[in-house]
Length: 216
Image (tube, rainbow, N blue to C red; front, side):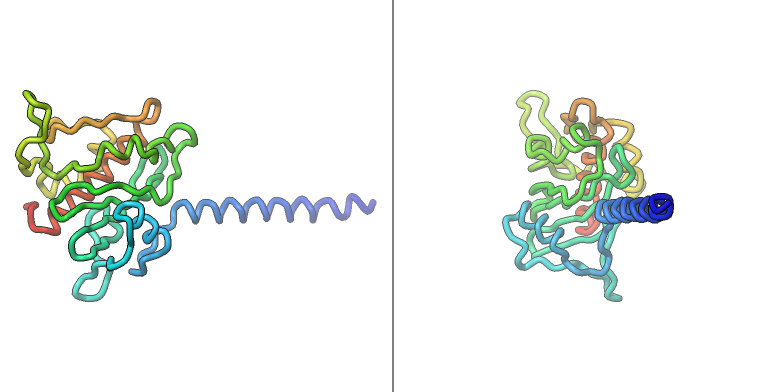
C-alpha cells in the first residue's frame, strides 16, 4: 500500500527532472544573445579566431540597437578585423552557431563554432579544424586561375542583394560556387551540415561587402 502511494509522485518528479534537463539543453543549444553584450561565448570565439577579444566592440546602429544584416545576429570589430555572429541551418534547424572572422582585406581569418546541434559523429565533424581550415583566406570575390590553380584577381561575383537573401537556399542546394571558383570539401555523410557552414561563411562575406558598400 505504501509503495502504491509513493510511486506516482516519484515517477512524476522523475519526469519533471528529465523534462527540465531537456529544456535547459535545448536553450543552451539555440540561445542567441541580442542584448549587445559580448558574452563569454563570443569572447571565446574571438580569441579562437584572432587570438584575443581585447579591443572588440559590438557594432550598433544610430539608434543604439545592435547592427545586423540578413542572417547575421551581431557584428564585432576592433577597427581592423571584423567578426560576424551567425546562426545557420545545417541538418538541424539553427544547428550551427558560429563566428566568422573577416580581416581588413575582406578575407576569412577563421571560423569558430560556438554551439553545434548537428548529428554527433557526422555533422559535428564540421567543427573540426581540418574542415574549417579550407575557408581561411577565402574572400568575397575570389576566383581561381585554371592554369596555375592560384587565386586570381578578386572580383565581386557573389554580389546582389537578391543573392544575399537567397544564400541559405543556395547552400542547401549546392556545395560549390562556380563563379567564385571555390569548391567545398564536404564532410562525408554530412552534406547538409557542410553546406550550412559554407552558407554561414558566404553570409559573413556578403555582409562584410555590404557593410563596406561593395554590394548593390
